[in-house]
Length: 460
Ligand code: UD1
Image 1 (cartoon, rainbow, N blue to C red):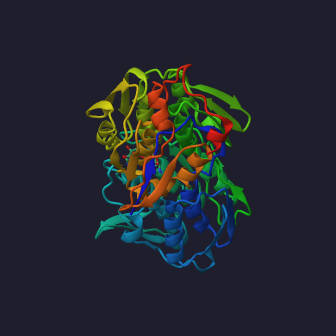
Image 2: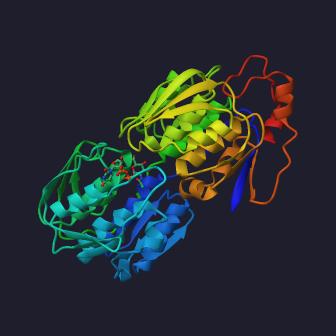
Image 3: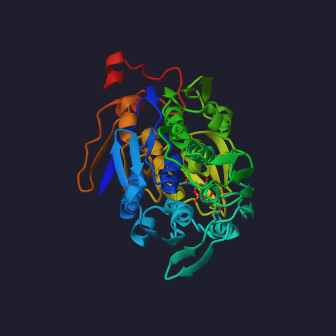
């Protein structure tokens, strides 16, 4: 296994283009099964979750071709109906195959995803929604075994104890698109990725209205056609992660393609923390605060602050002045990054679904292990801001959802390298040492006396 070796970063500067949204493309790939015609999807991120979904589609007999960021899916030979444990256990999002398999094949056998380090992730809403459309479902030998004749439109309430469900809304929307009659999905998830899926389905000939709101109307059609060319929205979680990287290193970064309308809660919190964010058509400009301020953050369903950025903003708030309270409303167990950040000098205490972050103004390098996808991003950000070298292990999580994040960060001036587990990398004799000798405060706490880098130094 590889690890990332990260040096304390100079202020990140420059421009990056945000990749396509992983959480959009996965259900959209599943939606391609709803027709026997080919579809072409653009702006697809090259991440391992996409590769896993491609493996599942191939096993189902589907032809796939992937070049650059363009994906062509042709379900010509689509015969299978099984999503096996080996693949589903690698990626929980495979549950979104359930709706399309049922709608096209009349049966589905999808492994239950099983445990997850970020806490329980039940599938009751998926099952309830598909049962309401007429599927009969049993759990046998760890598999969801579902059968149906032609599905029938229905009124479906998809609200759970923790609000709406993104992929359950997607599953029901996909199944309802080929059902007989009208379905009304109430308490639907409003996330931009749900809207993207609905828009993709519409591009295949589906009749869907209300996406983005809490009630979605789907009028079933006899058949759908392929989508000749569909472009995935940009990844709001990647954009948020990169914005925080800039803010944590005292930097100034432009994020091309970032959708400010998808990031309102994130922009608001970063501004509250003192980060300057300028919204321009098609891009965001992020400029670090002179001093980061503590803020309270609660993760909520969209348009609230996303749980998928909770770990990253926690890393940022470790550098702030004052005490921040972070409450996790979607996955109350999603705090495995806390002990790792504490090993880097953070002062975070956790009580149930709440973490109290006492901003220490700085972090120190350590050997840390990522437990899940977004926790791994938080540790990379912490490593950029830490005063000494950091090693992050568990990169298989990072690779599930970030396309070459280390290359992106290097383009902005960061020093980080991926090396095999056993290899060590000598610390860079760079600004880490100089900055400390000059009494420069930690990244995120710039002062006017900070060393000014020459253009040549910035290009290194
Ligand atoms: C999606 C995202 C994931 C994100 C999450 C919440 C994808 C591929 N993944 O996951 O990155 O963190 O939304 O924004 O899009 N729940 C139930 N019963 C169910 C389903 C969910 O109680 O049947 C609960 C979950 O435990 C959780 C909440 O509902 O507390 C939201 O989960 P959900 O929106 O379903 O997450 P996913 O769609 O799996």
